[in-house]
Length: 254
Image (cartoon, rainbow, N blue to C red):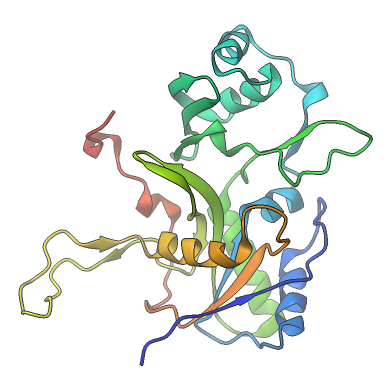
């Protein structure tokens, strides 16, 4: 019988710049009464990765550009936040009250360039915003290497974040960085139950796992920034989040 087991890794305190995430994750696995095994995958919330890497910005230090002031009037957001969104983006795709959709410099099409202020302590009453990791794949690799050094096993790592989607309401977890986990699994050529070969099926496996883990992580005050996944049904391998980003030449909607 195939099964996927998800274990919430609780008890991780507020993460600050310079925190050693592999050590925090190992301790959380022990608290959960588990031991990491080869083939396991640890799903880590983007927010604690960004915090550990010092990706927070004090808004008092941001000076909005003319373009940011113009867009801030349209989207009804703080011009300093809009300036950060522009700095993190390649292109603005949509702007309307309450919403700014961009192509992030990493290739993601997303709202607000992934910049967030929820559960981000400012300190001394200052407003602070949190950016995505500079290179989420590299972040995932460092965590994976640290877990291997600590536990001596080969595990996969997925960094997940909450995204909205075109044509559907609500947010869901998706992968923004991977290490040792196939981002995309190509099933083309494999037979279906009737023996007919699949022609177009590719599975966004890292996204599916990120979404499953998000059910335990939550979206508000749950305080669960990591999940252990056991039974991931695909072989671990070297990968990149770029596997999931559709090339512009194949984009039918822009």
